Image (cartoon, rainbow, N blue to C red; front, side):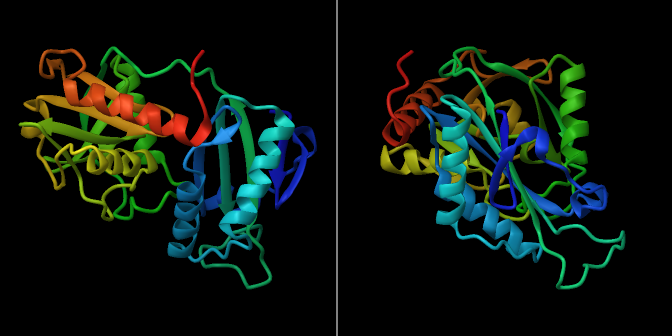
Length: 285
């Protein structure tokens, strides 16, 4: 936690200086990723870094590193910081230039930073969280993991002030995702989750969850569902890098199913934990 990466070099955090004319600061003109660390090992690193490059391509930022080069740099940072369980944050901005909406000239280089944070690993969640529903006021390119998060922040803050863990977003009654997670429901034994299009971020944990469904014979469909289907689902769960698979017990004050973790959600939690151990080693505490 005492070090960071700046443009590919590991430096002491106190030595890092970022320019106020950085377009990430001025415009939110950049992209980011958050990767979970277990036993000093990044989980699904290749998938995260591939998505980072995909987001960069969509907003026309040229990242001067390959996935393997970034992975090597990040592993060095994790080792030097001595992180066993935690998260890694990284972002690229379009760079430093005089403030102007149009892209700067080709002489401007992207700015790349990364840092780690210790996070205690508590294992899979047993109790379900509370959520509320909220209009999805975000832009129409939610598939890009951009620094522009005001819509997400406002929804998350409303949830927090209401004593809820998450805000589940919808567009005219069509459920999209959570403010910082993907949302899935279980109806008649089938997992339903919004298709991977421009209305949601194709979460890495969501991708892992769907892979586990496919490998273990759990029926699933990537199809839209409504607020009514959400509130009357047998089970609802969230997926995300920092929450893995989290059951939802209550939405808008209404209990979901029995109000306790459902059978399929519990199974997916178990399978997800096994996948983490396959990639990162034992989670025994």
